[in-house]
Amino acid sequence: MKKYINKISAGLVACLCVFAIHSCSDTYLEEVDRYSIDSESYFNSEDDYYNALVGAYDLLQSTYLNVILGEIASDNTVAGGESATDVVSWQQVDKMIHTPVNSELKNLWDWMYAGVNRANFILEFQDKTDFDGKEIILGETRFLRAYYYFELVKWFGPVPLKETRFEFGDETVLPRAPITDVYALIEADLNYAIEHLNYTAPQTGRATKGSAQALLGKAYLYQEKFSEATTVLDNLIANGPYQLVSDYDSIFETEGENNSESVFEVQYSDAEGAGFECLVCSEGNVAVGFNGIRNYTGPVFDSGFSFNVPTQEVVDEFEDGDLRKDVAILDIVAWAAANNATYGEGNEHTGYYNRKYIARKGDLNTGDQNLTNPNNYRAIRFADVLLMAAEAYNRGGISDVKAQEYLNRVRARAFGTAKDVTATGATLTDAIAHERRVELVGEGHRFFDLVRTGRGSEIDGFTTGKNEVFPIPIEEIQFSNGNWEQNANY
Image 1 (cartoon, rainbow, N blue to C red):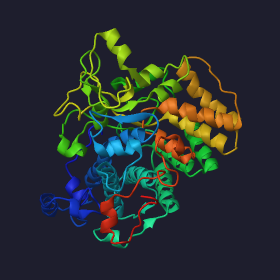
Image 2: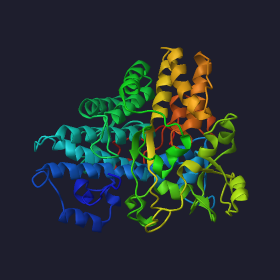
Image 3: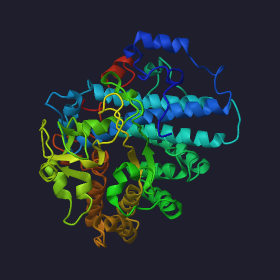
Image 4: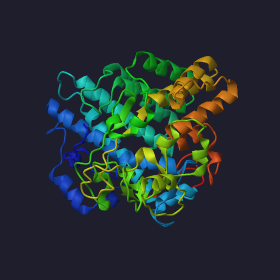
């Protein structure tokens, strides 16, 4: 599934904007009517279930937006771009002045619910046809539904919850489910996936038992269910096939995709291009082009739009001798001087770029070169699993010794030698938070790490009691006809 096929999407979901039907074009709705797939004409064979599963995977490609916004919203990066009005929705999130009228938050809402709806379509008709191996397809489907709902609940808090397809009109009667209810479904879906999936996937890029264990551990951690998190993450660490690769640099190059550290990766391809009129249509990782070096000429890298640029603060967070620094952060001034390269300076230029996810030369660049980069997104890495387990052991007051063990495994790889942390208690908590920041910088986790640990106020412009979640898009509030209240202080 390196290249997700998007040939059946019209029949699998009525519209990307699941609730806000009025924003869909008449032409698209006519196509849906012509090619509508219903329970009478679909799910009659293994191929039907498999093709529907491909459709459910397809929306993972849109999570490039979740990743780039998760960094921009944090203290790791600033929005950048060409000017202060370049992609205004991102600039607003960066300054924490976003409102319910924000097209990019609307896209995130729509695309995640499209993913939920495609998974729900399969599960609604899961009993229609039997075949060998169906439990694997259903396990992957429930993993994907959990993944999309997890994104929704961490971004928006209470959200509409349904286990069958959403229908037009649901927005006026279906409540925003409490966060605990959303997590309860996520936990149930992931426990099913753990029971029915194997550590080895039928195809590269598909969810596994390990993917489900890691996401379940993460869901527990976000709820501060520390004991449950240690149990599932310990099981994964002890029994899963994952290990830290020796060369951190290799992880983010093409040859490092889907390696032994990869617990779950979103697969991208440069084989099919797209345009700005439909970014979600690209088979490539759109974030890579947006992160790229402005007006660049020189070796190794391709040019890009200079968004999501790292701050001096995050660069200074790296300790002396940390081998990850030059992998995660490209110092463009030093690079240009050493490699006879040239570049331009965009808005909020800091002199740094997110080296993990900027365009490399050698891609096909089908269509627009900035929209079809094939760099996979490493959604869950084994290093992340170790650090989540360390945090759960420490913050749960369960075992600082175990927390140190997991933390120091990550640090040993980072420094090429033992660089042990021996602190305990709150000092160890801070050390783990530091390690998550430098290990995972550029990967979209920082904002949520700060918020879930009560440290959101460290972000410039952050208002406690408001910015822990993002606003429900104004269109959804309007179409609910008073059924849904907006998040507090928006």
